[in-house]
Image (cartoon, rainbow, N blue to C red; front, side, top):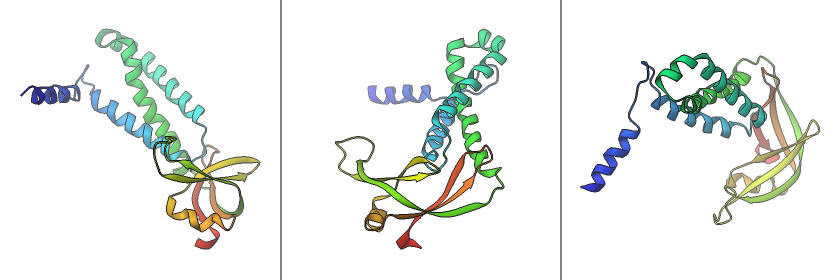
Length: 185
C-alpha cells in the first residue's frame, strides 16, 4: 500500500498546475522534450550550440523581465527563470526549424572525400559494447563530424567518397539534407 501511495504522490508532481491561469507544468515537460529534439537535429543542422544556448538564456531572461510583476507576486523569480528556459527551448527549436523551412535556396549535391574514419562508443560510454562509425569530412575549410548507423558502416570502409546534399538555411547556416555513399547511388 505504501508503494501505491508513493506512485500517486509522484504523479501529483506531474499534475497540471496554474499560476494566474497559465499552465506551467506541461509546458515545462514539453520544453525539455523539444530541447532534446533540437539537440539531436544539430548534427545535420550546422547551427553552433553556443548560439542556441544564448538564444535560450536571453529569451528566458526577456520573458522573465517582461512578466516581472506577475512572477514576483505569484511565483519565485528564480523558479520563473528556470520555467522560462522551457520557452527558450521552444524559441531555439523554432530557430532551428525556421532555418530549414523558410529557406528558398536550392539544394546542392557535391562529392566529398572522407578525411578520417574511426569507431567510437555509442554514447561516450565505454561500458556500452556497441561501436558507432564516425567520420570527418572537410567542407569549406571546416571539419564536420558525422555519425551513421552500424548497418551503413560496411558501405564506406573500402571507398572514401560521400555525396552530401547541402542547402543554405534561412539564417545562413547550412543544412545537410541527405548523406549517401558511393555504393548507395
